[in-house]
Image (cartoon, rainbow, N blue to C red; front, side, top):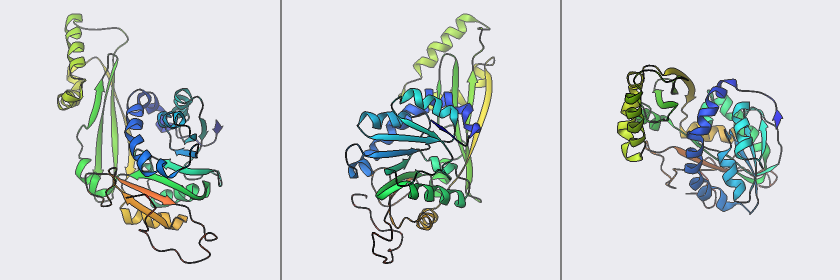
Length: 309
């Protein structure tokens, strides 16, 4: 693992992400990866997982025969990634400034990781680094949360969370329409090392928490979590907040063009070309150099990458 710049603010989240969201999000992103990206690549293609987190998706793709490198700015995230994908290669670096020229058949960045870039200049810098890292005709797939979607769904309500025997957590997203920024807050509760209070009552609560772990009980579980400090008054509460920025589709395409990408298509996770308020936006880009295009001018933003909806 190459050690460069660290993002320590993500280290506190790493263990929880590894236990909960990491496996779930990776499984959810495998289908769009297969449909939008992997179907256009040769077997054993060389891939870069940009903002790879705890490496669960790296491992899934290694098992499919791809050669995968994971890059992330958090050394603690990569600590877990090396455990989850021991055959992967991992690099600790800044997504805005990594330097791996002409190495990959494709780069992907999933789960809206690039929304963490808080300025269009930073986002453009990421795109430039990706462009340089791709081989000729290489592909770049990423998804972003966009303002219309965030305005509808990021409304300061608990949207997911779990209760475990020794800890509980929930996630609350917030969006500010005026400046197109927001944050998601992870609220964490940790049980005391020694049980306190009525042991029998706590045992009943534990059985209840197990009963509402099912997806069919999501609404009830989230309601309990939003009031969890009253249910478990002796559990220690802490909060972690991560800021994000929502970018309109047109601004993202312009930034991609600035970085060198001229062959860009957009779709939802289901392959629909119209991006609506219920879906994040997936961008699929192909690296086409001026040499390949014989010096002609590229057409503007919405050329379709073959196979993309």
